[in-house]
Image 1 (tube, helix red, strand yellow):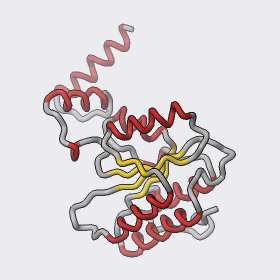
Image 2 (cartoon, one colour; image 1 turned 90 degrees about the horizontal axis):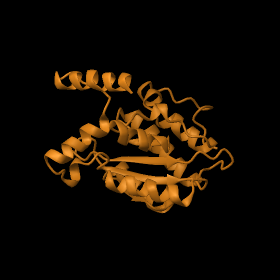
Image 3 (tube, rainbow, N blue to C red; image 1 turned 45 degrees about the vertical axis):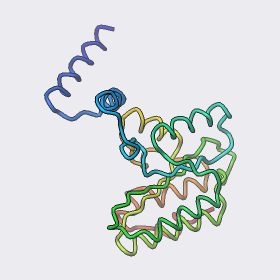
Image 4 (cartoon, rainbow, N blue to C red; image 1 turned 135 degrees about the vertical axis):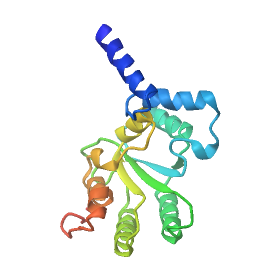
Length: 197
């Protein structure tokens, strides 16, 4: 206990001196809420649309994920057809229009569900969006991540990079490969690696 207390005091001193730190993300977010109430556009995941994918997560876990997403300001996408419409809308939006929207496939950790509830038409649409975006030099605002991404993003009070949250199912892993910043930034979409199963 004394060692943890000493670490907390040292980290607090860094924050007090204005040195940025990733520690105490929840505390900083709570302090911001305490000082002034956030408008709906200031929530952690405002502008994010999230589709819960997979069936292995228990119903209690799904309920908790939905509550966290709603309180963080995300819009929950309830079906594959709604996801297709959202992605189609994202394709039409000009990059410089000022709208900052992102789409997240939040995946479970089932090794047996090969598609994780993502139909082939939806995965092809995501692939097309990513390829078109990389050809025009745009940025892709689609993530396909393991559900731990949500917990870590809330803990750090900042949306985390997708590259550390590889999902388990083959189709979601293929989407993750396509959507991670490293692959898009390098414009290195290899036919064998980007094939959607």
